[in-house]
Length: 82
Image (cartoon, rainbow, N blue to C red; front, top):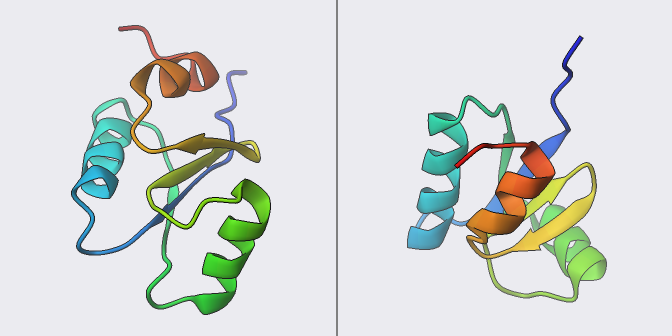
């Protein structure tokens, strides 16, 4: 059975790269949890603690952070061909 890694996207509503990441994941049928860090201060602090990054998007794939829209890294971690 092919189980998908756990994917979490930390994002904000006004971030165009966040939208790009989420659209890319949807296009490739990757399920993910979207966390709006403008509404969830604990999640924002958790993201910074894990990644030392203030900016979004940050995508966690099985707790491995991908900073920004790094298509090659996402493809590798999520086994997306293309």
